Image (tube, rainbow, N blue to C red; front, side, top):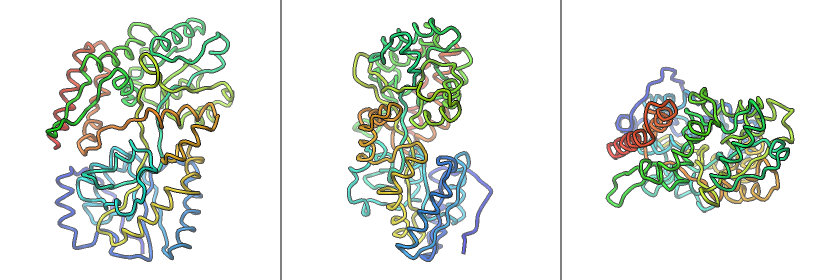
Length: 427
């Protein structure tokens, strides 16, 4: 019998979640040990044909275990509140897809089952993503699929004007400048204001950190170090000093940037690994005209980019933890691991699988896979990081600079102070 659904969503802080779990532990969560059926929550929209995919997965799982599966698709926008409410009401599913930055929050609350004893070889997963599910040496989620940001560019325009892919920041700036001048009316390089994962690479590339944990357990942000500021200043100056962006981009998010490429308004831009497929579907005229390259380092090599995606977790206290792990295991290796990546446009979050893409020779896939393997980086795996994102600390910093409301020094000082306050109070 399907578990009762709760539709009134409220956000609960980690401390409250812990108390709720303690109060409802005797009820065995939402599962009640019913191993005849398994309930799974998957985020909506990642795979356009998700129903057919899970029909196949569920058939295989039921054949192997004798357990029926019910999959519910949850909108990303509702996910955090829906999960909090399910915990409060004792109606959690057995298995859940979680964004990498969600996982530490729910793990810290005691809501998730430790999967360490089930994972035979953690090294088979992309390690930055795997680390996002690890809290106090226990694994509360395993990577399912991954995405990363590199640069998508108009290969036909580069070739027409005799340009190669840039290999340093200065080459990037010069190439964007020359091509924007040659292609009247096109944006050389959009600098979005509402895309924090487009800002982070420049902080890391300059030598700063959004946050690092010191030996005494406290957190320090070096966004406002000379190195961190150098990266932020270079990126924002592409707009403010070099005129390579557009004033409206101060309010752009990653979707807006992708649409600027699809609408043939931009020469190149930082973009997600899943976007080339979507861009070409939106504008078939761009077939064969796009390329991609790894984010170049300040002088040479690569700079780090945010490795995001989703983990799969099993809820604690349902009585179906082992059955839940068997479902997670089915999705995170072999046929279905590969198939989800192919259908969704994301990478399976396994090292061997990503390596195969990095050797594929596909010009719109290989560079992103190389970025993920060689220069992928995660945000701090702590519950309080979700508050940093919810309060838009990095977005606010970026917009203040682009709007001329703060200097790089002022904005990075405020961002560093806010990040440190949030993370240290959350310890």
